[in-house]
Amino acid sequence: MAEMTFDNASENRSDDDIMLVAEALNEYRSSLHAVEQLDLLKMGPGLKSLIWGLRIYVLFMVGVVVINTIQTLH
Image (cartoon, rainbow, N blue to C red; front, side, top):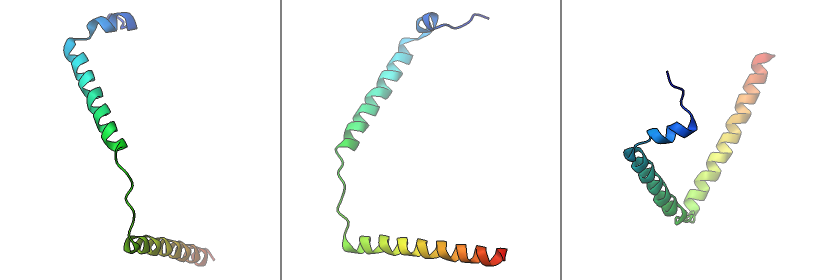
């Protein structure tokens, strides 16, 4: 079995492979450009309240879990 080296690997590439890579790179570049054009949206007061409410809820539940774990271990 012949060992593949960098030199003879480039000889085995077909034009179809090169076109597929070029197409993928072009698609990547166009999507990257589209994402870079996006801007952050301002959050409304309702959404800010909801996010803060969820943060407080998570902290409360972490406290509940810690207290229950301590009580279970004693």
